Image 1 (tube, protein in one colour):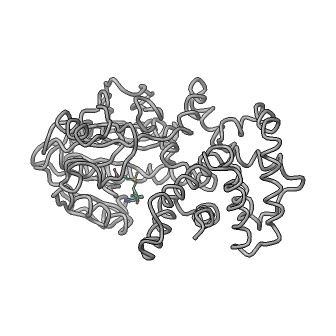
Image 2: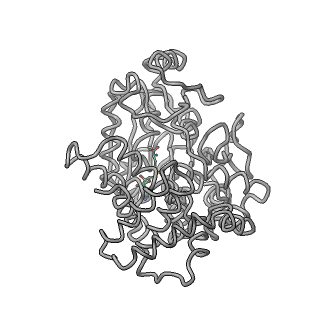
Length: 437
Ligand SMILES: C[S@@+](CC[C@H](N)C(=O)[O-])C[C@H]1O[C@@H](n2cnc3c(N)ncnc32)[C@H](O)[C@@H]1O
């Protein structure tokens, strides 16, 4: 299949059906495996590049489209709008010969049975070629186009971070590095760095995050030395702070309340294998991925498919020592890694998410023993999901107190600490630590 047509179909899954880009690409690439040998690595690489690129830049691509069309396309032609965005993205951001980018993109109109639009798309892309400089200059005063952020999200960042929103949007548009977590049960970070060097993979240690390594260039996990043997896992450095902050001790009962796909679950076990760990998630399919990750690392733990806030469905009544609540959130800190959030967040009700986070916090607190610790984490940088949530909880919970986090990373908030995206190469993240008195 024409890779641009496959990109269009993948993007439609996100734009029309609200699927995540990861899920849509997984489906596209699995289809590819079925037709074994039909596509090569270059095809998959270009497919990902086109999908990630269009979703990363769509507010800017849309602004260009508006300047190229005399009359906007009807909503029912979202597929054609995506084709135009795909075409502009190739012309503007990729080193593909213009004639190939245009002719292959135009050809997709026929494949989606909109042959009548071939001339239109061809004319628009050729006009962009001719008038590129004036069009791009006209974008300079358009904040949506220059930041490539949709209006709602941009306003949220401006309000939450009046002094930092510019660096945040720049970081959101950059490509996230590939970060690794070294399994320190098996070898030290320095030892693994030597292995990478021997394999010709350039990498550096991440300052202040003990097991973390950042690769200069992403690579396929199978090419990482010792990956199959569990020496290393792929995980952003900010997420690797959780295990140390929770600091599980041998023999303790730990609840990982929103655990799948298990990045932090596995790290907790690497950190302290002698814990009694209960991993809960309300999505069975995501827990399957957790099981695969555990198996690769040679760990096991109790896994429960449940709504963690419905404690009656999973808790046996024995108070637990520590809880990790890696809450479902807007993902506003990980846009550089998941640019589809720019599109998908438009239809997400933040109030609903905040209510869910509050429910989880209040319900899980009941299962914690006096003296026990709860680590609240999100990959959001919005106050309402973070310090606002914790302030409300502390205000209404007499037996809760904050354990301040003193660290060389992030910025201190009214409660907890926030890492802004890009800080020391990390994703945007938030942590707050609470103790039951
Ligand atoms: C931020 S992700 C967790 C990432 C995971 N901790 C890791 O490090 O790989 C949030 C998870 O919460 C789960 N979730 C959402 N609402 C939940 C609920 N009410 N009870 C349990 N899990 C829930 C989602 O399915 C999702 O897997």
